[in-house]
Length: 355
Image (cartoon, rainbow, N blue to C red; front, side):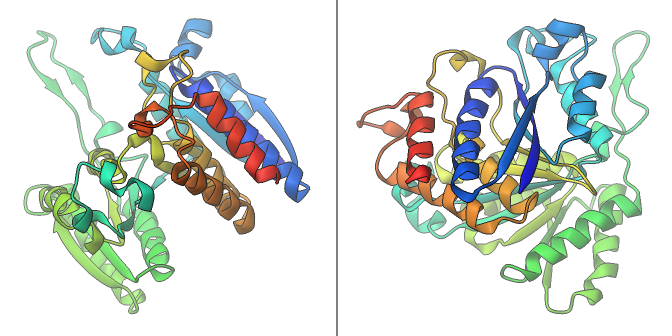
């Protein structure tokens, strides 16, 4: 198979972890006889520094002519520490999602047997956790209008807006995911307070009879935030709006023991983007110490979701699991053992795939 992949390394540790994913993708392509063409483009703070925009038109064109996008991370302290900055790296991420129609963010949360005791939660609470969030990605408070500040600067406002079609397309995807898993769907909202949440709940309730084989639960977001810590194994597929999903998926990520382990996919009608859930971690940039496994697992999701190549996806997941079991990990997971460099982990993974 011929594959055209857009590479958006982004900021901070993004280029380093994406480089390791490229090693793994190339090893898989060689083993299975695929032809991979990579095309690199700028986004985030790197793009602002180069051309003044966080998501340039040239980058968008690269994404449009690709079969899939492999993305690193966005963010830079010089913008984080300047609330008055008119152009920000994160604007590029939101614009990219909107322009590419990436309306569904798929974030799995699972545990690794050899890392159970590295989680901040007790073994008996998290062992066997296997859930997936579907977060609506192009609506809600991040995109609603009007937004801004009063002329006096003493009042600010953001608007949360949802249309039925935005909720319905994500909910239908959630039902289909649940059908392929444990047939349990949880709609996460704040319907006791928010009008948009009541629209979410009403829409899911209307669709539920079309999926009689799926059990549907409705929970307020604050209750989910507690139960994710108390009893994460009780969840299977969770669907929710943009802001709630942003917060809850970061909370869920620590169940595994490290944010550097969880991949994600952002799906739309045509383009599909794959990225680690962690940020740009600028403190580690250029030190060759960042954990590349989430990005490598994002490449696994790419083979599965973008190209329907399950064997290739499974092989990547298998060697990642083996690297953790054998202690071929970066300093965040090494404990008292040897800490490998980012590039060393990538080399090891590629070598194992080639065998």
